[in-house]
Amino acid sequence: MHPNRLQKLLDFFETEPNDPFLKYALATEYLNSNEPDKALFYYEDLFVNHTDYVGTYYHLGKLYEALNRKVDAVKTYQKGMQVAKSLKDMHAFSELQTVYNLATGQDYEDD
Image 1 (tube, rainbow, N blue to C red):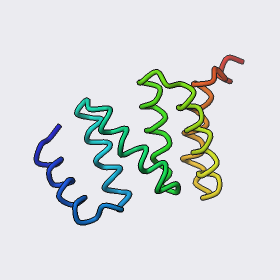
Image 2: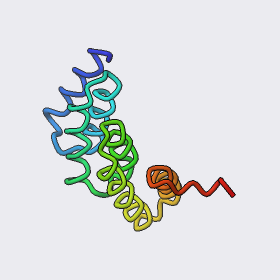
Image 3: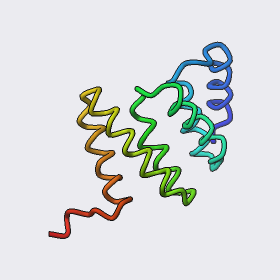
């Protein structure tokens, strides 16, 4: 973790506590510094309060998988695919579908 970067993000967050980008950046910073509980807090906040922030779903799902919460990961990927599709973000949809398929054992490249 880069302490100055984290502190700057926290300072910005104090003045803009509802900014989804700052929440995402804090989650990412905490995840990179091996503080998954703090990362989870911000990712789950995004999941609940900023449902259109589509980048959340991939990273929250991966974190759930790392925490051995596979059912939560699968549900997160499913929700993310719905959101991405509604936003017509087919790149995000494709990425989420790939991790969903892997998490559920649907590897179509075996053909």
